[in-house]
Length: 256
Image 1 (tube, one colour):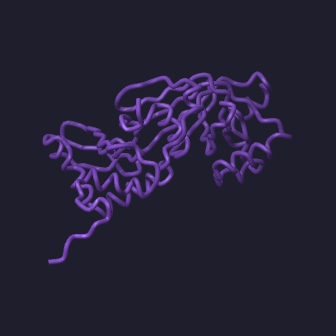
Image 2 (spheres, rainbow, N blue to C red):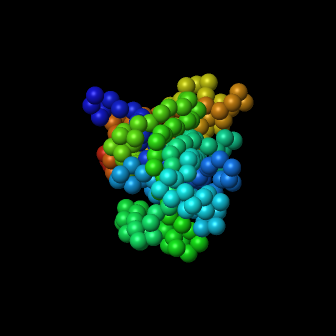
Image 3 (tube, rainbow, N blue to C red):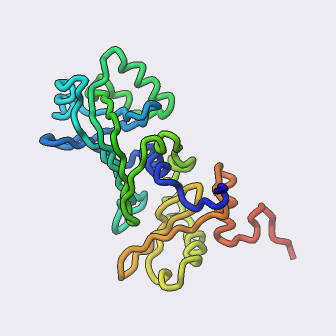
């Protein structure tokens, strides 16, 4: 299969992008209250580095369990960047066992994570937050299309979408400042869907997703690019092509 035939990100890519965006995450285990984890970073070995409040029941239990760890689930919620009737785009559940990181290894691991993704929440490790490891055993992602399991090997081989970190700002800008672009994109939808309220839902290297909020419910539609794009100039050209812009290559209208 050539890259030109791909029209959607793989499930593994979607999970990696959800991890990178970090819209919302919590760690859940039996008999303790769920705890928000501001850091959830996939490490090269296939485990997830997570942070929890030092005093949280799950962190206390993980310290007591030692190398046996505690069975837990990391739940990632991928929220739409706009106020929609249904704001959740997808849910990711990563099941495994969570254990404390040895004190002598914490600083090196924090530095490694910061080099890859400088999350400001890392500054709280050792000052109210504790670093833990979740040894992943299974990964499941669910969205409007259904649920699917992701293999750990596929997850490690995938990369986040190149535009996932500025996707929210771009979609908010489109929705607020460029109704004419949104109208041109909406014109590509099947006629019955154009009667609903059309909002930008997602952006990735394969295309644009729109949410249609109609009286009969919500409908998500993907408008694929002609081929995957990899940088901002390519993204601009792909969107202009999708809109049907005659000046896709930067030509200017002839003066009369």
